[in-house]
Every structure is written in C-alpha cells, then in structure tokens.
Length: 494
Ligand code: ADP
Ligand code: LRH
Image (cartoon, rainbow, N blue to C red; front, side, top):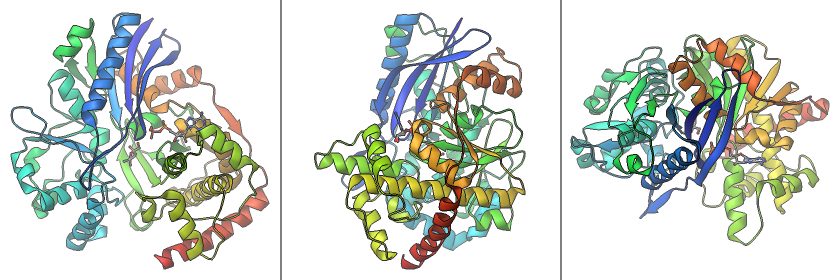
C-alpha cells in the first residue's frame, strides 16, 4: 500500500487528502478541510495565503502522524492568482484575489491597446478580467514599486511549492491560465509582455506536469513529523486540469463540467482550437495532461455560495442540503437569468442582484429562498445546455453524455436538471475530482502507472459515479427557448 498526499485548494475550501494506492485501486480520505476566505484590507481583496500554508502544513503533519511516511505530495489550486517574491525569496505582499474589482478596467485598457482578436490569437485563452495578464497590468498601474522590487512571479501552487522545498518553477497547466503564454507552445509570450511594458524576467521557467521538484525542506514541517523523504511533485497544478484528468470515461470524446465555485464546461482536444468561432464564443484553450482543455467558465455554484452567505447574515439556516430541499419543493421556472452576467462576479448582495436582473428582464423576482435557489439551478442547467450546443458547434462532434465532477456533482437536483436541459445522460462523480487527478499525476510521475490511459482505467476502477437520464425534455426545451430570449434581453439591459 502506497501513501500519497493531495493538497487541493479550491476557491471556496482547501483540503488535505490522503490517498492510498494498492496497485489496483485508489482511495481518498479527507484529513483536513478549511475554508478559503478572502481578506479585505481597505478596499483591496486578498487571498489569505499564510493561513492556507499553515493549514496545509497541519494537514501534512496529521497524515504522517497517523499513517506514517508519505511517498509524495502534490499541490493544486484555483488558477490565475500569483505572489511576488524578491531575490531573497521573501513574499512581497499577500496575493491579490482574482475577484478584486481592479481587474475589469485593466482588461478594458489592455483590450483597447491590443484588441480582443489579437489577444486570443496569441494566447488561445478566453478573455476574463481576472487572468494574470490583466491582474499584472492592474498592479503595474496601481503599484509599480512592488513590481520593480519583485524577482519572480509565482502562481499559487508554485509559490507554495517554493515555500515547501525552496525550488522555483512554473507548472505548465496552470501557467496557461495566465494568458501570458504563446498558444500551443510551452513558452511565455515575451513580445506580448513587452508591448504592455510588463517585466518578463519575473516569469520562471515552465516545467511539465509530472516533474519532480525535490523534497520537503520547510523547517517547521520537518520538526512536525518524518517528511524529509517525501517527494514534492508538480502535479497538474491547476485544479481544473486535475479534475479533467479524473473524469471516469475511456471514450475519446466527452463533455465535462468541473462543478465547484465555478462550472468549467468543455472537452479535451489535441491542440488549441483558435479560430473565429472560438474567439467569438469566448472559449478558452487551457493546458492539460498531454492535451488541451477547450472549455468555458460558467459562474457556477458561486451563485449559491453567495446566496448562502447573504441568507446566513440575516439569521437564516442555509446549508446546501436544506437549500436543495427547498428548491425541490418550489414552483418550476418562475424566473430565468444568464448566470454569466458580469455583475454577478462579485456582487455585494447576490439575491438582490438576481432580483434586479429579473425586474430588468420583465420577470417577477423570487421572494423566498426555495424559489431563488431553484431559479439559480434551472438557469445554470440551461446555461450548460447553451455551452454544450456551442461546444458541439465548434468541435463538430456530438457528446452523448455529460460528466459532472467536483463538489457540485453531489447535487442531485442540479444533476437531474442538467440531464433534462441537455437531453443527455449525466454521469456524476467523483466529487473530489481535483484531489483524485492530483494523485493520479503523482502516480504517473513516480512510475507506478505507465500511461494516461492506465490512469483512466484506474479512475474507472476506483469511483462509482451516479447516472441521471433526461426527463421532461419538452418542458425543458421550451424553457430553453425562453432562456435564450432572456439572455438577449439581459445583455441589452446592461
Ligand atoms: P471549490 O473546489 O471551487 O472550492 P468544490 O468542488 O469543493 O468547490 O465544490 C463546492 C460546492 O459543492 C459547494 O458550493 C456546494 O454547492 C457543493 N456541495 C458540497 N457538498 C455538497 C453536498 N453534500 N450536496 C450537494 N452539493 C454539495
Ligand atoms: C476553478 C478555477 C477555474 C479558473 C478560476 C479562477 O477553481 O481554477 O478554472 O478559471 O478558478
């Protein structure tokens, strides 16, 4: 039995997962889970990296204390965010949170300078205000001193790996999400950086997922337990890349939704798809393990997380099971909206913003939590249908089933709605997809499994997904026609 560790840092929570591999199957056990909550200082929004690092170390120490030595560990996290270190290896500031409002105008300025088409053509990446490119540009506008003092820019998992074992490198899958790389290549786009007068010397060399970094050298952690022989491996360090690795299918062509704070919906392709259609539909081509992830960001369960926060702030009980139950009991199709409205990226009050959109689009706003949550689930499912149609259009393929992986795959109501809206079978699970993918890539790196297809077989042997057949397809088809009209209206009213 081999002991491994996956540190999976999602946008809403981080977890340390212990994995045991017996040569035939892989099982995961959650050892520690902690919330990943932003810190506000003045009007700036940061990631609490110090607390994440501490939680991570406690989790590692807990595993070695109970289960003995760990052969290897890997870190994956949400994309795009970074920290700057100086030439002494000191972190210069807390990493800014990708939802910080400063990025929207930075993206507008960069688009003005270079043009949307050019940016997509060069990088193959969907234009999103939070991409590292725009964050870096915003930083240059706001605090050039900080940028001048920096020696290296490290994305979150690369930064934590640096803390852990002192080595500096940029793992490929996460590096692609920066929008600072040349599409389809393993190189930074230094010309693009020069055009924007961004210092390209900050960018570390890019290494492939699956390369070994070194050993744990953090002194406090070495005192906490026997970790000096634990290998630190660059897994696919983008959480979504990990999740895609663990989709339990051996079919060549499949659609997936990595469902968590975000819903990342797409497929895998051999090479980036960069053409007028993918540009117009704002698809992205992020690096995967030996492939590219052609996908779209859909606002996802963030809509629910923020609804929960607001409900709890007024004393309502709003745990996810309770909300799903209330949504199940509510009247269907009371209102619909496009979940990808930019106002929903970081609203002060999610329910009120959704109600405002209802008014603007001529619909009666929901008054109770059950109706609100049901409308969110229905709108998400219909958005998935829209993205699936677009995906089939750009790839020219038909996807018979939609795989849902990640925390959201436990939501039976949303999975059923997705089957109904897309008129496809939905296969839900694993729920800890990123942690599973993280470990699979470590096993590949350690030579315990030989090829990516062995990896897929191992997932299929190790997880038991739940399937959902479509129901009420005609009803959902007419809801989709209404949804399309509302999406148009919503765009006009912005
Ligand atoms: P992230 O990695 O972005 O932090 P996760 O993959 O952990 O996100 O998914 C978190 C989401 O999963 C929650 O916001 C919640 O909506 C959903 N979820 C978690 N547990 C359950 C559950 N028991 N039933 C239904 N949905 C759940
Ligand atoms: C999901 C995710 C997604 C990115 C977003 C910033 O956790 O990594 O793939 O677009 O965070």
